[in-house]
Image 1 (cartoon, rainbow, N blue to C red):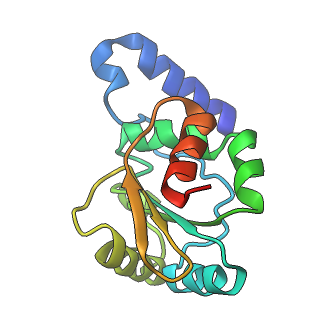
Image 2 (image 1 turned 180 degrees about the vertical axis):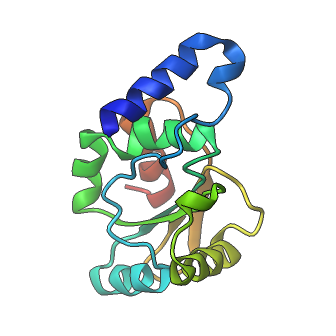
Length: 160
């Protein structure tokens, strides 16, 4: 399935400049990195218990081309997964538009609650860095440069 998705994205990107700016044509949502958490309250509890910051990512897996690009180029990369494993609490909140990709009603409530707390502007894609104390430390949209650029951003925001 990942190969099929990558093929469709590559095909769309090479077809025309307009196609590269539109959402993926597949009816299947984009693959998601091993986020672990899709509940902000659980992420906050884990952050408090471990002393690690949260990276909460808001995406639209079936309509937001930059979200898919962020996922593919940063969050699904082994380098980022290795970096995040012992340093971060990862949380993901997906807002697909196609009916067949809708999460459960309970997940929709969790997504909406996270959005109300961390993404009132409704920006997509958006990565929000939250300290273990619950304070928002930074927000960023798509950053080009892969995992290294995102890690550099995190080091700037976290001061380490």
